[in-house]
Picture (cartoon, rainbow, N blue to C red):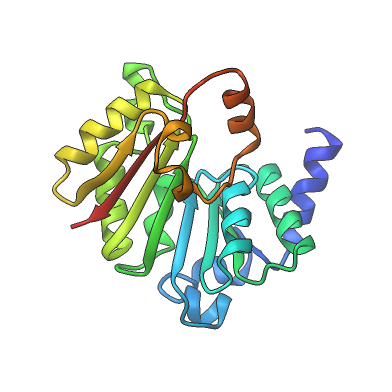
Length: 219
């Protein structure tokens, strides 16, 4: 492990805004995020597979009356988001270090108001379908901890994942698709991403790739 990554892991271990194994809230926060961490009754928004938490932080700055949680397994990325949130004095932002497949171990039924999935790995190989974060198993899990009429958003540069997700979400018994576009930057839906761009999204757009977007609601 590089010294830089080691420093990031050590930072996360000490950071108050990172929930991870061996910290007290890791095993007690389920169903109690408002009570134990945020200490308010504001809506909870998740960014799954958040990486460095660029959406978590960007939305946290724009919506101080909501609570944002970035979820990712990569400790070095979580540490970068944690530091950026701390430097911006964002008390409405937290990070949870865990695999997305274990999310239901940290969120109770009807605890979450919104879920954002921003440029996840499309997992294009057939053998990796079980890892796609919009497959039926994941959609079922999201439906359990989303509140009634809770929102689910997907942004991706992958045409494959976009088409796959349109199919799985539209066929899901839990969700209804409200709006979608295969070219967000040429769409009237552009304002719905609140101007937040990840580092890689800026690169994709600069190279001429179109950004796809799906907005769905829990039935």
